[in-house]
Length: 137
Image 1 (spheres, one colour):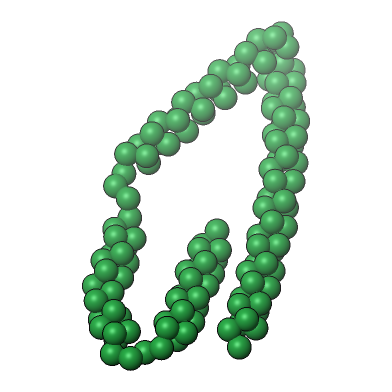
Image 2 (cartoon, rainbow, N blue to C red; image 1 turned 135 degrees about the horizontal axis):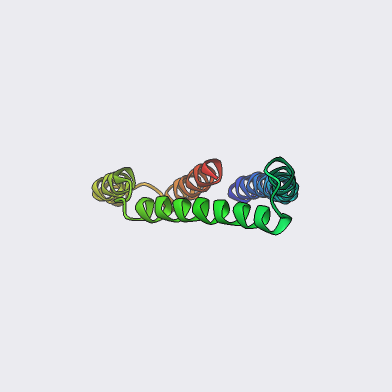
């Protein structure tokens, strides 16, 4: 019984991992296509600046480069401020709840619950945690 349950959980996790890999591959392809589109848009912007304001193509490229530099500095500042924020306290609350429940589980195990049942509960708990972690991503 335990072997079939473990096989079922393994197959379920394998399917979830395959689904995640396909989703990541689609996101990666989308990011590459976006980068190409962004490059073409910047090229069109430089061409438009050169023709609309009668400036040299080099000056138009320089204007686009300075704009991108300013955008990257803003993104870096936002990233730096986000890194300084305190971590979410819900994770520590979950750890605290698990630590608080541990003694009562140990007492129940000592009263005569079979080791197989404890192992089964541990496997199910681990599968639930892995499933929640996969669902967050």
